[in-house]
Image (cartoon, rainbow, N blue to C red; front, side):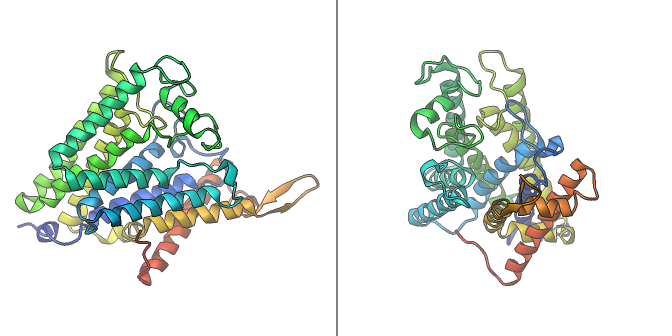
Length: 375
């Protein structure tokens, strides 16, 4: 047996912590620029169809939720429901903070979607075998494709994939009008209908988790190859569905719609990345370089919530500067450094990197004291 193989077949999967830590660190990087008007394009979401590296972060995290479920010891429905409700509650708290707009509270959100998808994935794991989980994922994706491309919406718009008139936007306006994303107010990237295909993302994670759980029956190389090879197959299928399918079947890669092609494309990339991490960290035993990512990966929700509260606080604290102008604490700190010494785009990136370091220090402080946000 090769060095590291014994660890690869037993004990905690450190590669999962590394992958989760890298994902949450990337989330901190893209969520915390110094100035949203000067951000390099890879650190921005694509406006509609297409993708950038930033569009991979959220689906990667949902995929990891599915993988981690495979190894979770929380088996009861009550535990799963409580955890889902806590995630949804934290998401609503972040939406309220720091001005507490109760009457215009945004109901959907990142943590809310994670909570719903977690509960659905828990149920799939509890009641379905891996083949059933794969079948459910396929039904969700094909069913969503049929809904979005064949069904006329409640407002009368024919089937289409445009921002304002697609079926998901119409349903959101009908059911949660006044409680959607403030940037649009007419559609929501974490809306109701698009949550259906989002459930398929942790289901793909469940399937990869099952493959990892059975790693004792095969060589570490074959386990890694299965994750990477299977992931690349899904990635290609996503690209074909999103870019090369016949007109009647085409559904472009689109994070805001969480399109079926987006699910396959991002789920495949996540599987391949996890396979590489497993080979490097758990099989080969190269761990020292990844210690900061492991620290990040042990407390992802705590880091995410702390970052949201701190950033909102920095923007909420304001006082007058020059006559007729008001600057937030964020703007004052950013102008003090690094905006005072670096070009605009470089300064914005430098601030984001500083925030990645700040939140790593928060995660490390919690880790050293054994404090973990166990939802």
